[in-house]
Length: 413
Image 1 (cartoon, rainbow, N blue to C red):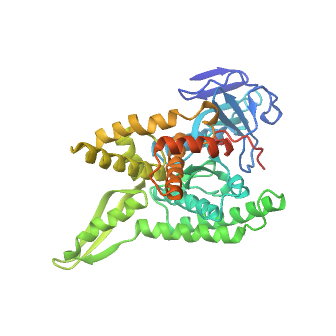
Image 2 (image 1 turned 120 degrees about the vertical axis):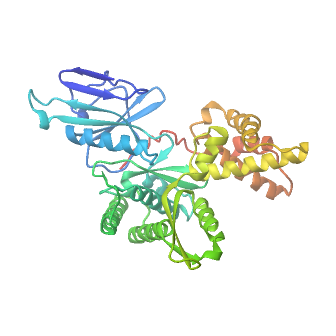
C-alpha cells in the first residue's frame, strides 16, 4: 500500500501495518511514542528504533532515501531466493524541504526476527564452551550461502548478523544489506576481500564490547576471526570442489551427494565430464543450496523450520513410522506417517505448553529440547520415558527457568 502526503511517503508490503500512526514529522532519534520498545540489537552506524504492533516488532533504520530504496530491493531479492535475511516490510521517504529530491531522508522498515539473538547476548550467557564455535559455524554457513548466490555483502560483521537456535546449533541471518551487491558469481578476490573485512569487523567489534564489559575477557577476538576464515574456506572447498575418480567408481557420485545432503545442502544439478572412454570422471556439483532437510520436512508436514531442527524432527518421524508399522504390521507411506506424527505427537506436545511460557522457545526448538530431555531422563532412570512424562518434567523444572527470547528486550550496546 502506498500513502502519500507531505511531508512523507510510506510504501508497505501486504500483511504488515501501514505505519501511518507514527510521528514521521519528527526525526527518528527524537521519537517519544507509545509503540516504541527497546530491543536487543547489534551496533549500527545509523539510528535504529523499534516499534511494536500487537505481537510483531519492526526495526526502523534512518538512512537516505536512495539507501532505503536500495536496501529494500536487496532484501526483497534475498527473500525471493530463500536466503536467510530479515524481511523488508516497507520504506519511508521524508521530504526534508520542498524540491529536495536526492537529499530526502529515508527510513527502512524490517520485521524483527522472532526468537533471534545478537551475538553479544550469546557470548555473555553461560551456554557452555561450544557457543563460540556454534556462532562461527553459523556465520560461515551464511557467508558461503550468500557467496554461492553471487551476493557480495561488503560489511560482514557479527553485529550485522542475528542468530536463532537450531536444535542445539545456531542459524545466522543477515540484518544489514546496505552495502551488498548481486553478481552472477564472485571472484576469488572478492570473496577474500569480504573475509578481510569480516576479520577486521569481528576483531574490532569484540574488542569494543570487551572494553565496555559486555563480552567476557576470556573471548579471544583474533581467534574467533581466524576461525571464521578457516571454517569458511573449509565449507567453500567442500561445496565447490571437483572430484575425480575412475568410471567404474560411479557409486562415488551418490556418496558425494549424500555427504552434501548431510551438511544440509541440496544438489540441483551435476556436471560430469568424461575425458576419454574408460578413463577418469570429473564430478562437480552445480547450484548447491542449503535446506535439504527443511524442504523434506515441509513436504511431509507443512512445518517451516530450520535445517538442524528439520533433521531432528525427520528422525523422530522415522522412529514414529517404524514403531507404528511394527505395531500394525502394515506399511505406512511417508506422507501419511508425517500427518499422523503431526496429529498424534508434535501438535499435542506443543499445544500443552502454557501460554505464559511460549515466548521461551519457538515450537520446533521446544520439541527438540524436549526430545533431548526425554533421552537424558531415560538414561538417568534406565528405562524408556514416555513423551507425557518428559513433558511434565520439562515444563516443571526446565522451561520456566529459561529467559523469554521471542522478542529479546535486553538493551543492546
